[in-house]
Image (cartoon, rainbow, N blue to C red; front, side, top):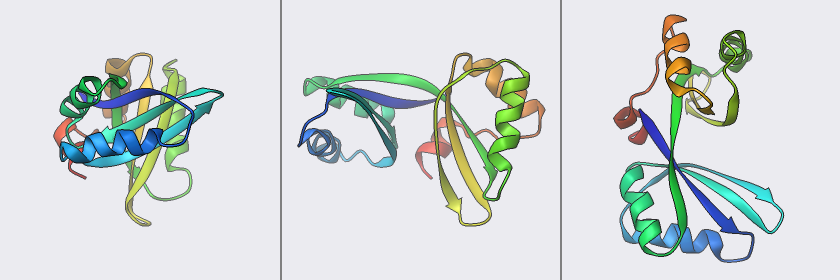
Length: 142
């Protein structure tokens, strides 16, 4: 199972720099990042090459960080690819709490990362549909 690090952060200048400086000091690589604004505070979601170490380093520096279980699936980098995965999840009543994606090979392959209410069920239905899920080590080293 793969994990992302979620950071609860005050929405003010310098917050991202503080987080990235901690990760850089511990030679932890950021594979993907999303930042969600929610007024005075927001959630920063980080896909790291070493999520457990990253979460520990952030906590030790006083940053509110947690590990969240995620599902990462390879999809085509073409129109309709994400729709097919979303339809499978909908058909099995799996709710997507959060998601983001990135291209691995332009016009060929992308990875989509889901935070869902039932990760094990999401993995099963996507595997059953023929999708390749990324193991944690594969995902962190992309």
